[in-house]
Image (cartoon, rainbow, N blue to C red; front, side):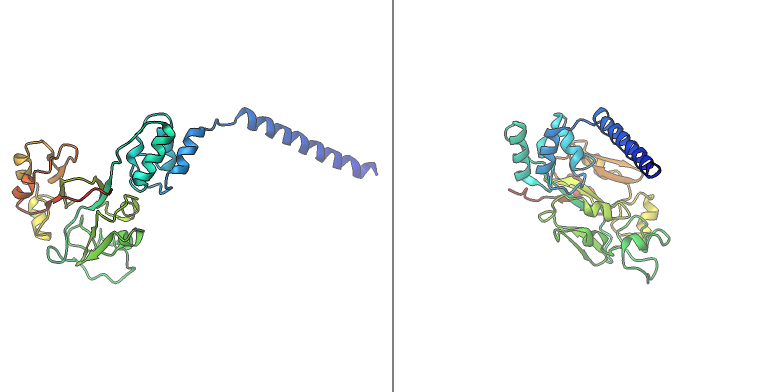
Length: 268
């Protein structure tokens, strides 16, 4: 009898000791919870899109609880979420910073062509693995709709070989940004501003061979911008939305017509 009972007691004793050690360790090594951050995270939509500039909803909530971020940065949550967070933090009324996703390409079949006849998996990510993509412009949109499939708000359409985003439907969730294998989609503030709808960084001569509207880095936009919002690096123009006044002078000066004015109504 003792031969059976003794091993059982030994195993039970080891189990009890191990449980006691784990219990003590869980107390000693416990990570303190930020209850305010948890409460804020419950108010966020959970898109984890990064449109706020943080790693996700948990990162944004942690920054808010420490006073390191503003309540109005969540585009998918909109005014309702911003108001709820402001009430929780006791910060009063806040202004929501609305953003929209933008496709930096105008490479429709009217402006460019495909360099090959593609017969494979219908998707941008798959086609991009084949010699850098199927379009003549290695930077351009392939129009196979990965961004459109990722969008839950029906804000993206693909027409004539290029994707476009309706800013009035876009919620800034960031799913299309993550889906584009060429990095052609980015967030811009929802305000009147000039935007460069091209991502080509080749020299002007190479760009003109593959696209009728590709940026050639001619600097004409830089010269007419009185606000200093436009710059050209690597033969490619960019506009700083913070500095841009939406005057439209750069859009008029651009000989390639790849700079356009984004002029939409901010959601109420």
